[in-house]
Image 1 (cartoon, rainbow, N blue to C red):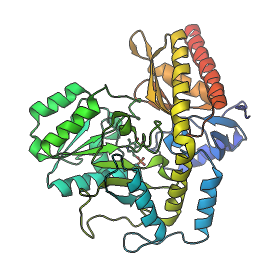
Image 2: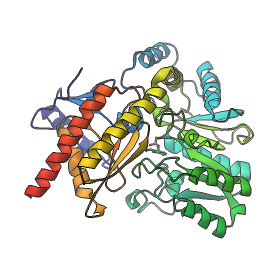
Image 3: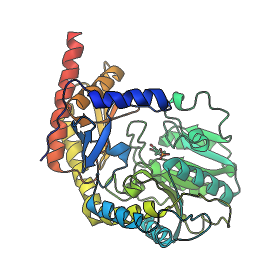
Image 4: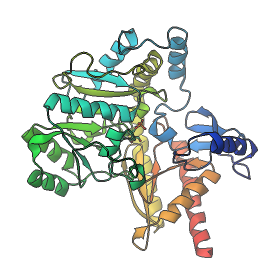
Length: 423
Ligand code: PLP
């Protein structure tokens, strides 16, 4: 069993060289949570260019579903790399494209007939869903929720409402988008006020990831499904972060027994190779030839990785996500009972948020300090919302790795509190 190992000073000399190069030549528009310069991965572990070893509870922002370098994934990619790298599904065919479409369609909840469009990312999947919803319904308006994150392309950005900085200076964005609260009262407001006959689709994250792992109140998704049915609106589940088994079921909407009309998928679907998809009820995906395509979408390499990813996930790791998620949630709640800085621990499966608050207010500075301190002790964590720590390890995570992560997490929390007291 590995142990995290981080030398001082951090970042080390090789990392500092790369950071300087990045500062000089790279667009500085990325968020860049902390200065880790990754070199190699194995399972839930990442080593950096200076030989430091980190336990990764971010999974590359919920992407490395099967962990780093799972042998079945690597083998599938290697094999395909020697056969064919690219042949565009926009105009032609290759076997893996059709086979992956069949496989993803088979995952659609409820067991009805489904069709699949393949693209390259989460935002592209959301764009495809926007276009399909408008095309199919012949309506223009879209609804999304306060706090939502659907991506950075201008259409997906118009649906997002997570942080003002994402949108400032980029307008005008897609017109005809209304945001309502992510709650039953938001749905009531929607039902009573908006002219529903113009609404093509309502976009929802079954659990809001980026905004701080917000699990909706019970009854919310069922009520949303009924509202859509009453008014002929398509329900689009953005499962880019929650999908592919992360929450302990293939799709998070299955926890509430609802069947969306369109599901957006990306992140974990190909274990790190770029791939996005929408899976829609067959009767909804009725657009004709040339309506929407992508040069790279569903490239053979990503398809090979995705087919292997589904095999690996269905081989037991979705159950592992459910079991390890329960363990992680319970252990974090034990820690929360000892640490008043933790206001709430929430989530499903391996998508967990730990909300920090001090004197009833979001503990923003403490969250930043906690991420940084955990990093220095060898644990990679993500932020979410204003003051939430997000844990989303690979679905292959073990109970021993959870032990290690929680020991580092609790010590880092104590260190942050002690420093704050001393300051
Ligand atoms: N939708 C959700 C729910 C996401 O969490 C994200 C990314 O974090 C996206 C869409 C955008 O995905 P991508 O960054 O692949 O465009």
